[in-house]
Length: 225
Image: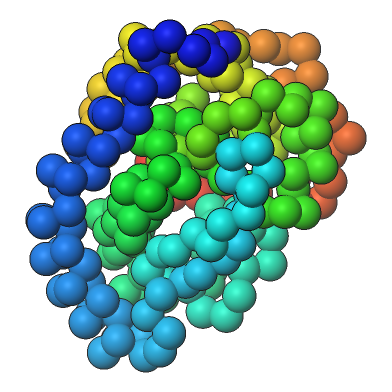
């Protein structure tokens, strides 16, 4: 994993450049979306949840609220039945994630990196302490696979996150961003970016010590994060 040299500052510069470029348009979209949430869903407009960031430091992840009640497992695609009508539209347009641009500006998150975990899920990833040596991100190998299959086993997610930490570079980040942009525009890809590891992989193999939560559900809406 690159830990010094030119890569970390260039990665941070890329994060800041994109965050500043998107800040103006994002604020306008957020104002409209927040108003719609307030009228159609009521309060609260924002969903705030503590997640674990780089080096295990906790931070409060902020999103637009898209579901009723509080999440029970922290894996939103398993709780599609709790999505509100407004929330479904926000999810499909990816607008609910826009408040996280604040985390991009403050350095809590990066454009590319493993998604931040709930504290109770960190122990599961303890076998690879290196996962938390990097900033959590908006998109990574795991999110691209989830977009393609509509489901991602938690063990497979950790494997893919570990792979990113091993291979991370500016070229890798740009490839993931390019693929993510294509997915957001509705493009389908047959060739995966990440290596397929059949041994103890969660998808399409079998998860390690599967739990009820990780039992594959009825296929969800394809293309969801």
